[in-house]
Amino acid sequence: MKATTKSLYEITAMADDAFIAKHPNHHTSLGLMDKVLRAKGIPADAVTVDNIDSKIRVVLLILDHQPDLVGIGIGSTLVDDIRLLSELNLNDLTVNDVLALLEEHFVSN
Image (cartoon, rainbow, N blue to C red; front, top):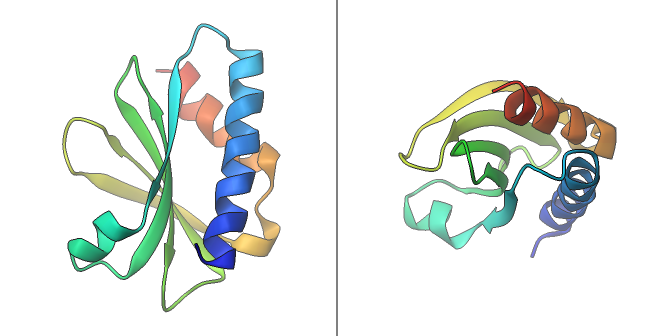
């Protein structure tokens, strides 16, 4: 696993743990997409957090040619659709940023 992907995964895992602690009735699944994206011709790694109940997926994507940027997207676990919302510098991304993202898209829906 690339160092940037590992860092992103660790931040996201801590945010997911904090989310579950605050919202124990929500069920999530943390995932890593690397070989799957490359098999589709996308030179990137992604960390995903799925809301099991609502089928909403939060995607944090690092493209190979922009390893310092994290693309933030929302999609569905039912279909292969990701809508990119924004991007942040990986070095600026915090556990609280990802937690806020999860709460925005999982709790309000």
